[in-house]
Every structure is written in C-alpha cells, then in structure tokens.
Length: 135
Image (cartoon, rainbow, N blue to C red; front, side, top):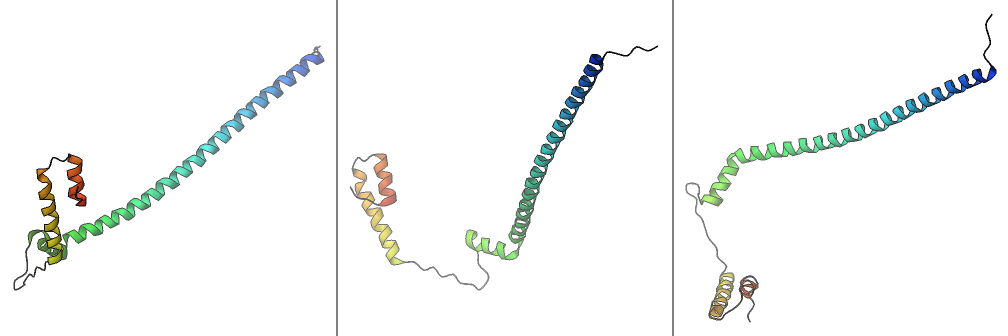
C-alpha cells in the first residue's frame, strides 16, 4: 500500500513549484522588456541613419552638379578670363580705375611711411596698417 506524504510535504512542494514558476516568469518578462527596449533603440538608430543617408545623397547630387559645372565650357572660359587674363579674338578689355580710391590709398600709405622713423611696437604698427590710425 502506498503511503501518503504528509500534508506539509505536499504544501512545501507546491510552494517550491510556485516560486520556481514565479522566478521563471519574472525572467521571461525581463528578457521580453529588454528585447523590446533594444528593438526601440535599433529603430531609432535606423531612422537616424536613414536621414543621414538622405542628406548625404542630396549632397552627392549637389557635388555631381558642381563637377558638371566645372567641366562645362562656360566655367573654363570664365576661369581663363579671371585667372589667366585671356580674352576672345576681337574682344577689347577696358580697365576703369576710381581716382578717389587710389588717392585715398596713396594717402594712407604715405601717412604710414612717415611713421616708420619712429620706434613703434609691433602691435601699433599692425594697428596702423589695418586701421590707419595716427599716433
């Protein structure tokens, strides 16, 4: 004949199973919430990377347009005129000078040259050079 376990052993066995299941349930929920948070962070990072990709693609398009412009005949002609001083056949160049501006510059240089005999500190010399101040 089978002996029945005392009631206390059955009660403790049920309590142990309950606590064991409770611990397992807590661990499952912890893992679930941890993965949910990780999934959220990955989605945010993916959104940031996608927006950066769009901005880089637009910048790439702008740079391609700029390269096409630099390869164009109009840009090459403009640079040849500005930097090399070239001109087309039959074209004449007119240089217009502003007499008032040149006289102002000459007077500034003249006033600075007068003060070269004096012993001035380097700071004062630079100040006079940029701001044309007389001491």
